[in-house]
Length: 360
Image (tube, rainbow, N blue to C red):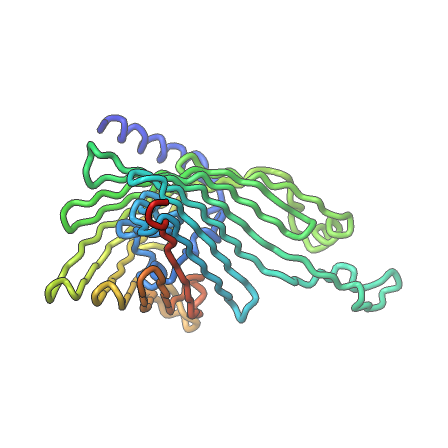
């Protein structure tokens, strides 16, 4: 088994070296924003502790922790004064005590973008009636499955089949497909998690439908004319370790989790930066009272930066959030800068369980 793991790891690194020079580092980066106010408030440090329907995104193995036969989560956010919109919907269904299916749908888009290429008519006059609009939208559908094994207590595994769709008006579109593999392991009060995202790499096939007028604009402005082709999202490894502490007759709980995102696409501006491997650590803490009220803190996005005066330093992004759980309903809030643009957003998400009636 150890030899197989070493071989697989070696193949991932070799494959990453092969493509890291040509593959964009931020392909499908809308899937890096995150979902669920709980996770965002904890600096995305939930790979080990994720145990609800949002696990379809964070760690599909965590779907085994859903409480209801059916669990649903919703989130809608807007960024940059409402210019960009992020929508998320997820549902899970528990087949039996050993298996759970999940479905996640994500849309990140900018709508009503003015298209001004025809602003000037044939006589060179400005005609605002010629202005139209288009949308730049990216979609992801994740089909998730999680399972436990009676012969290995504490272990649960899962995976995703991902379908990616991008549409830029009538000018460009793409289809992409990828796979994720995940596991969680519980040992006493310890939780461990690992997710291999895009384990086979995710390939987005782009096709362009450019008018001659638009091609002329590209040429006149010295820009490269886009060509049909593949965009590759390289594999990454997400790791997490957490422990739960109980106090005052189990009325109070404290759970810190340390996570790390390991990328294989070349040097990044992270705490550990090398070629081709970079490591981005982050930390989250969740305090709870009787599993009803929660306070959450997170630290992430640690990187070196330079301000307008030329002074350099280390940038650390703090996150904050609270949660309320009443029976089968949960409301979570996060104050976070999950777009890494220096602008904090107020994020809310809801979740509720639907249980089967007795005898059904």
